[in-house]
Length: 125
Image 1 (cartoon, rainbow, N blue to C red):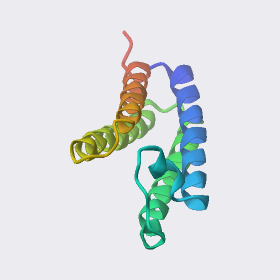
Image 2 (cartoon, rainbow, N blue to C red):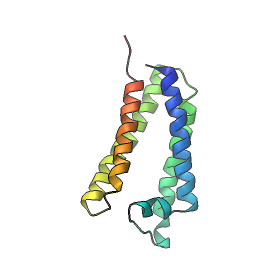
Image 3 (tube, rainbow, N blue to C red):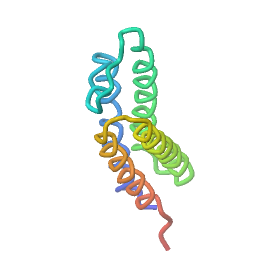
Image 4 (cartoon, one colour):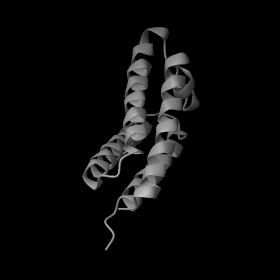
């Protein structure tokens, strides 16, 4: 497992998820509007709950960026892979239901993130 590269990726991931959480909490309609989704103010709770998940992943990522234990890092990596994998699948499902093609850019970004986590967490001989 490449601890240094993985720890750097976790720190970067922490900043990205923290930023997403802040945006979703302050301007809940902004990120959905990029893919053509308009949230009614009564639906802001959905964005707030996603912001909370983003904050949780930011804490997990920042904490993981300071760890060296391979088992702990592997658990964190698999948690991030599960989150981004499930999100990507659900975004494809949303696209199939009529969400803008712009969502596929986010799916591609998630695939890159998953690949980076998988590559940097692999066991090295």
